[in-house]
Length: 130
Image (cartoon, rainbow, N blue to C red):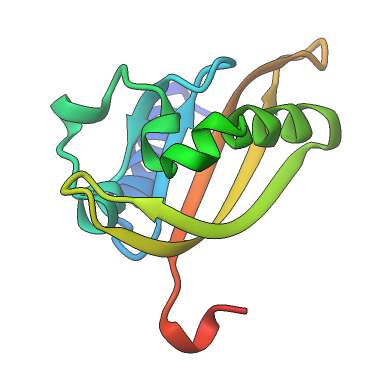
């Protein structure tokens, strides 16, 4: 593939993720620090880019879930099995809560080592909560 064509596709891919608003899509490093996000994070969770980049994704969890180390358990499970799913309450910037379905997927380098994660969150409607 030509270099310019590859660059165009990479830019288009980046824009595709960025423009999605019904799902919060976040890129995390190995420790759960937020590296990038899409417009869905602002819509669903209320954070602007400059407020959330560099924060740990634990910020989205209830205090009781942070105390129980749920975010760390989800990263460990994704590291071990490739992905982790969870449904539970999440916290918005304004402190309100919502039910969310999340999927954390491990990202690997060419040697198969985990180098980070993607985290996808979808806000659940009342009829979708089990």
